[in-house]
Image (spheres, helix red, strand yellow):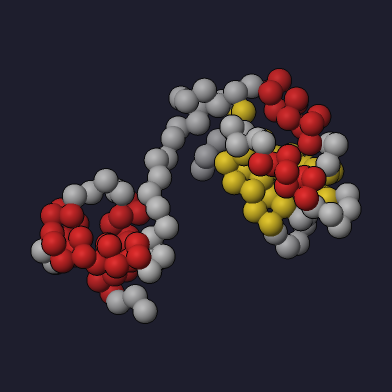
Amino acid sequence: MLDSTDKRILEELAKDGRISMKKLGEKVHLTGQAAANRVLRLEEEGVIEGYTVRLNNRKSGYAVQAFITVFTKSFDHQPFLSFVETQHSYIINNYKISGDGCYLMECKFPSNEELDKFLNDLTRYVNYKVSIVINKA
């Protein structure tokens, strides 16, 4: 079970995954070593699964962002999932969902032409609905 200090540590790490253990300790009222020990325990228990870098898609060459709601054509989803495995350069996240659709993909593309090619390939496996991101609110 997470106590209030663990929760504060997670909040601080979510803001800045590169924070030093000394600085983290200061923010949560622990020594740097005590903070490091807590972080290690949270990692070992699987509460912290890893650390990532947040990229600016537009500045890194992916000007088009889209959410694609996927409607499978059959009960066998494996051909679609195999296709997804080959598309890591475009697919940020692929969620299995309930409600409207079977999967929701968050994608990025360098151009509308690349999006169009991706969608043409996707139609071999599933039906879909596309929502293009205009701006992050």
